[in-house]
Amino acid sequence: MTRRPDLADARRVVVKVGSSSLTGTDGRLDTGALGRLVDVLADRVRSGHQVVLVTSGAIAAGIGPLGLARRPRDLATAQAAASVGQGLLLARYTDAFARHGLQVGQVLLTAEDTIRRGHYRNAQRALERLLDLGVVPVVNENDTVATDEIRFGDNDRLAALVSHLVRADALVLLTDVDGLHDGPPSRPGSRRISTVDGPQDLEGVVVTARGSAVGTGGMVTKLASVAIATGTGIPVVLTAAPQVRAALAGREVGTWFSATGRRMSRRRLWLAHAARSHGRVVLDDGAVRAVVERRTSLLPAGITAVEGEFDAGDVVELSDAQGRVVARGLVSYGSQELPDLMGSTTTELVERLGAGYDREVVHADDLVVVHTPR
Image: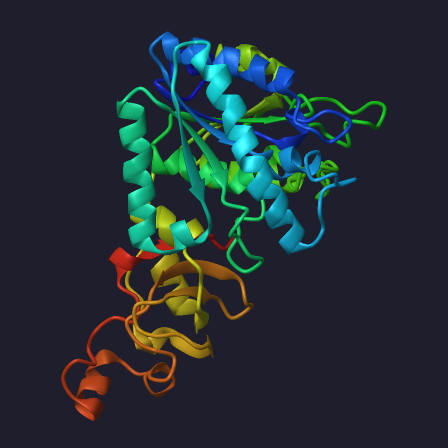
């Protein structure tokens, strides 16, 4: 897809809705807003298209029943609110879609499900099968068991990763403002940006990190998720929830972010955005050029420093001398071995240490470039 109007005919779309679009001013779940969203998505599905819904709102839905005054700030209470609210949220979606003769299937994910490759593939298979069966997948972060160390932090990033899991044609992010503006939307004179074709169109744009009182993701997290999706071939529309029908029809609402990169394999997506890094390997200028420009494997001769602790098979970051991460990959040596190998050619290592030391530190097939130095 290269144009906004193409969205009307897209076979498979991921739609993400935030907590602020599903709750009222009292912080409770707004079943009317949820029902209006479902009406639009159900019409889309019944017309022969596929929709994956990534929804926030579990914690917000639990605020009212637990008698809380606001969104919990401590993890344990947030988990408790999610436990209460998740069932309520799914029940509302089940009822709303059932009025259109459609079934939903709940899929709860944590970052661990994308960090571990087996979990990642299982999630992909489950989503594909639900779609094949005509079921609408309802995806949410598993806030009940998520921790500060393993959670996504916001469902915007989750939506971008799910878009790749299911090979979506586009991602639609629904929030409480009609697209990206060139300044805070509340500031007089701020204007909506209709189209963003690349990073150059964002120069001078002022965004905030703070989300709403019931949400966790501000515009910064949305733009980060946009970068994940568009950088690997998936266009994004960012708009207000009441505009979802017009957005899916390809009309001029919100902000259209054009895809800026090519589709990558799920394995490379996992390496680039989902896998947890266990350490860092610092490269000299020649190795940076070889990895980034020529896409070659990383050899011991190009390494100048090793940071952190990791084992063979772990994901590590590859950085330049200034500390900028340029790539990520699966390392074939542990952090205890590498210091004795760095700076030496594979021929020298075989002569000094014997057979088996002529292998790459990170093979090109297990490496993905994440930043291209200017």
